[in-house]
Each structure stands twice: as structure tokens, then as C-alpha cells.
Length: 226
Image 1 (cartoon, rainbow, N blue to C red):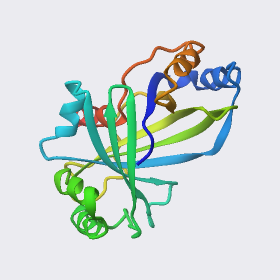
Image 2: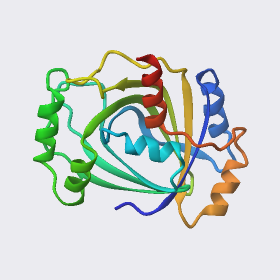
Image 3: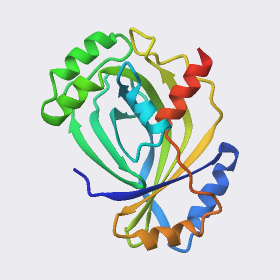
Image 4: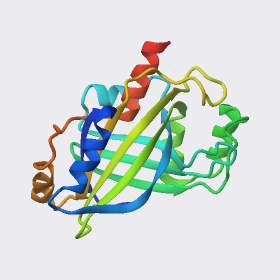
């Protein structure tokens, strides 16, 4: 399990992406690139009753999400990691389970995918996967990674977001996107002991802190579309 950390999000229209990069480059904490930009893909699981979605919408303070995450734009040999992401207000932590099998999302059915995935996991992940057993949404976006010069504060920028509804699909939907406006998501992350430091960093950003969930945005956008 990762250490507990603060996770604070801000959003703006994609037209301001150059400004966001400028704010980070000129920030007094001196942020530098920590990792090359890459495409992030996530498959979110939920119950048939959409319990995870409901928990987020009604503002449950302690909640969890299960997702399968991979990187890059090759859908023919996807090798990823199951992530159990837990949240308590602005504090978050994750558990990881690398999945050794690769999947061809262009041809596999969700039924086969879930059968093969269940055969690869055990422990707490097997329990969560038996509960959250409905592939619900695939998200894709580009992510840039930054880190303060003392390596205590991390900032990510997400953009070019795309959302693909899966609940009504027998095979992975990788083509029909939900029609959502382009947003940039800026997230500031730091150890849970660095509350004041996070506040100081945020004070230099001209954006307001707000709740933002890619999963919720994508599912609601897809519901409006269908």
C-alpha cells in the first residue's frame, strides 16, 4: 500500500493548458519534469447498481474505486495493474496488483476478460473484483508529471480526456466517446504530513480547488449521450 497522501484537484478549460504549464514553470517551488508525458488508460469497475457512482455523488467521505490501469496507445497487448484507490476527504491511498496476462481489447469480450482477470488475482483484490464486477467506463488522457525541487510535492496535468461507456457493451467500446467538454485537471499530491506546504503551493495557483472525478464525469456524460 502506498503511504497516505493529500490529493487536491483543480480544473480549467483546455484552452488554458499553456497557461497552466506556465504557472507550474514559474512557481516559486521550482517544479521540474519528473517523468515523460504519457497516455494513461483506466478501466473502472462498478456494481450493476452503480454503487461507486452513487457514493461519489452523495458525497460519502470514505469510498473506494477499483480500476485496471495501463499506459500507451496499443490496445492489442494491454498489460496493466489493478488499483484499489481509497479516499477519505482529501486524503488518498492506493493498493496495486500487477496482472501478468496481456489482453487484446480489440477482440476480447467482457465476459472472457473478466473470467481471465479473476483467474489472475487473489486476496483483497479478488474480493473487490467479485463485488465490483461490472466494467463501467474506460478513460484515456495525456498526463504530464512534475515534482518540486525538494521532491516533496508532485503535480500532474491531465488533458485530451476521452470517456468510453462500457455498461451496455458486450465487448470493449474503444470508439464511441461520450461528448464532454475538454478539461485540464491539475492535481497536487504530497505526503499527509505536509498540509501547510500543500496550502502554500496552492496559494500560488490561480485556480480554485474543487472535487473532480473522471469516473463520475465520464459515466454522467455517457448517460446524457445515450
